[in-house]
Each structure stands twice: as structure tokens, then as C-alpha cells.
Amino acid sequence: MEVELGETSAKILRFVVTMIPIGLLDLALTMLFVTFLKVIETVWSLFHHVYMSAFAPDWWIRLPQPEPVIVFGLPASAADLEDDHVHAP
Image 1: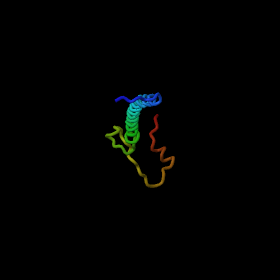
Image 2 (image 1 turned 180 degrees about the vertical axis):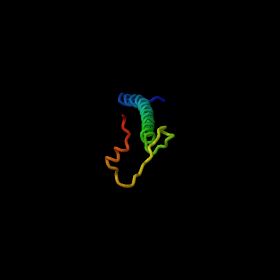
Image 3 (image 1 turned 60 degrees about the horizontal axis):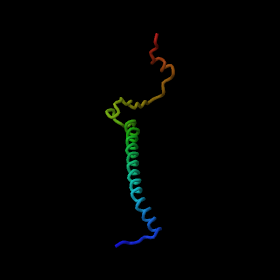
Image 4 (image 1 turned 30 degrees about the vertical axis):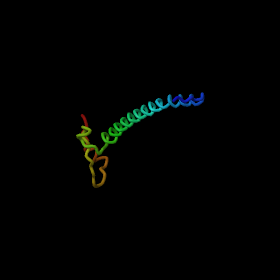
């Protein structure tokens, strides 16, 4: 059984049949691109928020972390600090 389509209907059908695969391809490419961006963002976030974090353990960043020092008392005077330094001859 064949159905005769008018000229306008044929153009609309041809447009729809052509655009559906293009739209699906566009959707697939967009999903791949967004997935790639999310992977890059995750790696970036891990590097900057974990790797470079002060809370990261030494074994993670392979650098010695400074120990926090809490000093109670009055600050040292400039003369006391000068005595502590070793001067080159």
C-alpha cells in the first residue's frame, strides 16, 4: 500500500529523517565531550585540593610537611633573634 505525499509533506518527512541522525550524533558527541571535561575537572580537582592540600599525608605528596609550632610566651626581641643567627666570617 503506497501513500502519496504532497510536496510539503515530503519535504517535512525528508527534513525529519535527515535531522534525527544528525541530532543523535550531536547528542553523542556532546556527551563524549562533557565526559572528557568532567574527567579533566576531576583530575584537576584531585591535584589541587588533595595533592596540594596541607591535609594530605607525606606519603601522598612525597614532600616533608612542616610541623605546626605553637609558641607560648612573649615574642623574642630583635637582639635575641640576632644572637641566634650564625654569621659567616
